Amino acid sequence: MTTTENPGIAPSIGDQQETLAPLDLRSLFVAGVHFGHPSKRWNPKMEKYIFGKRSRAHIIDLSKTIVALNSAKAFIEKIIGEGGECLMVGTKAQAQAAVKEAAEKVGAMYINQRWLGGMMTNFQTIQARIERLVYLEDAFAKNTVIAQTKRESLMLATEVERLNKFFGGIKEMQKLPQVLFIVDIDKEEIAVAEAKRLGIPIVAIVDTNCDPTKVDYAIPGNDDSVRSITLIAQHIAEAIASGTEHAKRAREERMAAEAELEAQEAVARAAAQEKAAVRAAQVAKEKAEADSKRAAAAAAAKAAKAAAAAVAASESSPEETTADASSVAVSEVKTEESPASTAPEAASEKAPKAKAAPKAKAATKKAAPKAKAEPKARPEPKAKSEPKAKAVAEPASQETTDDVKADEEKSES
Image (tube, helix red, strand yellow):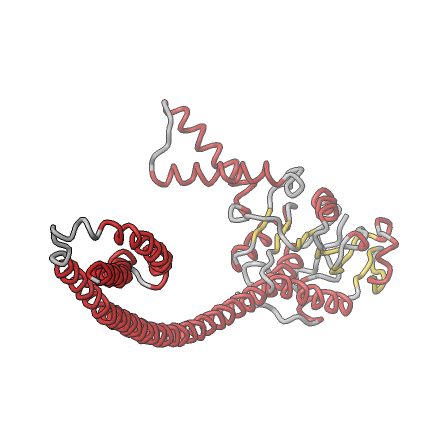
């Protein structure tokens, strides 16, 4: 049988103040934290936490309780400050109200009715039941319950009540907690086993009949007294609240730093955009200047080409005029020579003409290569070669007239 506190020393629950009692020997002694189990029901591993024996019951050393509670509070505050969650577990009758009140005061998660097997190791199934509870509560709040009869509506209401009994304290739990606070590890052995399997640290109130090696942070104290559980749970809740405040402050500082960084990035981005705009304008200006220079160069080249073509045309025109004049002169010479050969002298000129014909042929043959070679130097070979051929043929006709005159003189003599 567990020893009970002296009612004359400790105040009743109704007389407790809302302010948290200081963590000292007197407050722990008044709450009855020092009472342990009978000596015949003790665990030898709790020997270092036992101060002595009184009325066949062990007395817990409260100085070690203070040290252990302070280290547990520091650990919980650190975990919560880093963004973690603490799950408070106390399903025994003496701990249900105290755990619920302390957890709701700081907005922590809690389980105070029954630890269902697989609450953490089979969290997917548990989360499905939590979602069902949230859905039904929302349906009842909005008056959109899908039920054919009144009996079905009553059954749904009963289901909501039953789910709230087991999962009311973890409706907001979206992931596994990072630390557990447990009252009486012998009664909550399933929770301890699941936490150890998942590697979740445990902070627990350990009485003289428990094994302190099963938990990470053991708080030696009476786990059968309402006042003792309430006091320790309040200190754990204080650590949770302090950690939440640190997490909130760190989150605000991080958000402020992110906002400042975003402002700096916006300023740098605006400066970079301004520089890019200036650079783009300069590039556009340089491109326009380059295009204008290129257009001017193209126009100058086109003008030079047109001037060169005009010069070439002016150089080629005198040659064509000289070729036309020579052809006209040759035609005039032919017309002048035609009266010299009259009809009375036709008989006497037959023989000399026959001799002069080979000379004329030879002269034309000699002039032919010149006419063929002429097109290489000039673009219009035919117009320029004909005057030369005619000019070569003109001396031959003069020779024939001289021969005719000589024959005539001989015949006269």
